[in-house]
Image (cartoon, rainbow, N blue to C red):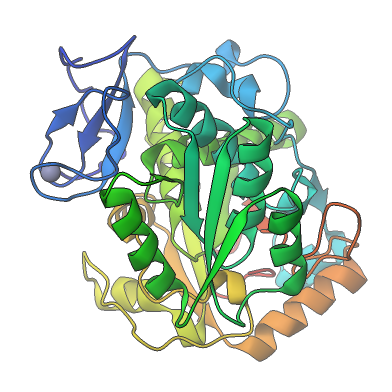
Length: 389
Ligand SMILES: [Zn+2]
């Protein structure tokens, strides 16, 4: 079941709950959204996607933050701190250096716990309440644990986070602990932590809120919706290209889904959809490898290494959703070395006043910001080196 930019609308199945259901992207099986706890397809273990009977247009959005986009989400409101509505900075000096007409940087570090993960958690924790579970868990390189702990605490739930021992910024661990999470350090890397927490979830001991959980990606769609709305308001046009850091490929998948749904509703023409471009650290770049070699699947990298701990991931779980997103939008994926990452951080901090990771330690921040760059109306067709990662 291919993920096409302009696919025909799926018929609403009998398992739908108030116009919401889950569909397997591999075999097309459909499931009720909230009757059972389910992360992957019962039949083939493929990834699930949240599907809707109706898709909104821009006129349907009102209010502020993630829940401005409630008509594109499974609920009218979530467990909120609140989150979203992050600034989209202009960076004129870097824009001129890159040689494009407009360049903006989305500062996701301005979310309540300091990363875009909050957008997914406000939806995911609400779903946990709906399905009636009260123990949440995730594997994390840092940001997810802080977000899960904060939103779990807000919802009055127990939280458990699995972290690779010695490989997570101390501030992020402290943030999760302060919110009352139980922390389990695992010998190994993030992928080993994810394997372990998936085992716990499969045994029904915890509700999994890693980006394998399809509901988290719904909240993360709002990054793309905010970028489109703000660029249109400022330029009267949508961006040509959106550049995203790739860890588990959740945001690439989420933005592609947001744009597909706008195409479905008629709010966006296929030729107006920004080209999705993923950036990985060279030492952890299985997505780049798959894009360059034209593969539909990624090859899991057992050994990954980069200073950018938040994207030190060798087996991006959402690759089957993200690879079609890159291909269908005419985007690409590039790898950058650690020296380039450090130089980009410095450039952002010194020439744009928009800090990338790590952001300055303030009361609600001690780790990565998850900055996203957006090109608007570029005249460059060969953007190969993004200004941020
Ligand atoms: Zn399936």
